[in-house]
Amino acid sequence: MPQQARDAEFAPHAAIDLRDQNSMFLALEELGIACMQDAWIRSNDPGHKDAAAVHEQAEEFLADILMLLSTGGDESRIVQNGWAGAELAKHLRASLRQELAAETAAQGLEGGTDAMSDEVVIRLALSCYLKDLELLTVRDAHEKMLGRKIEPKEYIDFMIGWSGVFSGAKPSLELPMAFMIFKGAQKH
Image 1 (cartoon, rainbow, N blue to C red):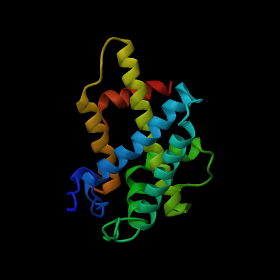
Image 2: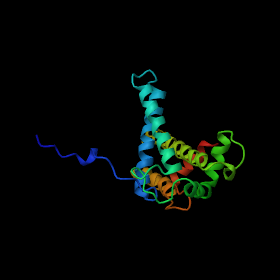
Image 3: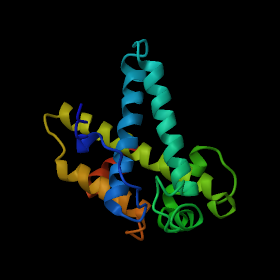
Image 4: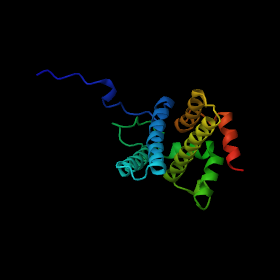
């Protein structure tokens, strides 16, 4: 019996290049989807039959991406170009200085990021990204309540900003102005 050709959509993917912004965009987007699905179920239907499995999947995905960004994983999963770990953490310390300081304070951690391990810095940066993604979702709901909607370009620019920082393509985080105004208003 002849073997059926594998659908490219379901074929194993090549090793991810963490320095490639497109690859990082997709990785962060997948992480966001998993975490936002978990957050939605916990908020709206905590008794859902799949709630525990969805939560476990989101935690596993976060742990996996943290491991890949912190250690580089093996060559079957990550292009071995030295970006993971110390180099990435050094870049995040510089490019997300304010965001990391705010997240450090929010989590009640002592000292600056220079004294923290690379893995802790990367975990804090992922936390900053996920909190901003959740806030973008709140902004979208707010706009819908007012009879408006955010443009797809705002989401794309948001993801370009975060993937640019994580891939090293951008020296600092640049997010859409409308999002930044909304974020600033939430602090007051």
